[in-house]
Length: 113
Image (cartoon, rainbow, N blue to C red):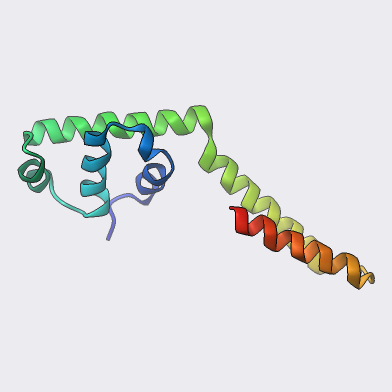
């Protein structure tokens, strides 16, 4: 089981903005579920160095999300689309052509996110 899904999501979105060492260390720690000792052996840095790298990388990821908000915006957009879809399903619109166009647009939007 992954230690923290939130960090994994941040890593997926902002990982390329980390240093190679930070990205690899977080991938090993969160993605591969390796211990500090195992990461230390694999990367040839001390356990304390691994721990410091993890903390610094996590801080940078959370700061990037605070500033850029890409994950928050994605979640808000997804919620808006779901609400729109629900409203469309509840509507009593009779125009099949418009409903088909709305449905196509919803599929297109969902494909982009």
